[in-house]
Image (cartoon, rainbow, N blue to C red; front, side, top):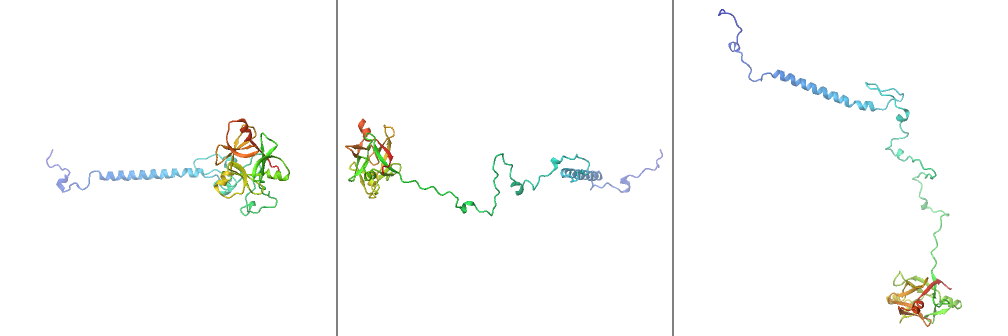
Length: 274
């Protein structure tokens, strides 16, 4: 081959050298990055368009029954499914105040008018009158073993006497009240305002002097008796002592285990004689 045959000049012969400031293949990397960015933007737009699809499809159909335009078509639902309920939605007060269907046989309640006052603020003449207060409880105390004799105040003492005239009947009738010293027990008041109390263990009628001793002496607690329908009366301030009659005189004696004591200390509360 001839030595003088022509050949292309080499870079180092004409003074051109590679650019060391740019890495090889940089232009291809720029193109690939731009393509990736365009792909991502297209995917985001497609997703956004897809998300808008259910809103369009869930919109209520036109009143004339025509279907919505689009790629997907639905059959027209039946009238019972698409017909909206009358009135406002279930979250409004009008729907909430719609009365529920009442059961058979029930009475519908009238609507409440806020301008109407309660009927209790203006009682009419036809309103029932309050019940009268109960009358005072008047009682007579009858002996069990002497059923024709009753407690009777005579000369300030309480004795067991037979029923006499009207004055005797009044003195044999007592107002039964709550115990002066214990409200769960009894106190006996006479028609003229005295109380029966024990003094020196004898039952007498005295005026209430307001002392604690008087209240205790005039209070007796009813206890069950072994005789049906009868009670015994125990002293509040002398527990274990009961009222009994002895020689037809009422007195306070300790309990005794004997048939005579049980009969003498048993009494029946009956309607007042007066």
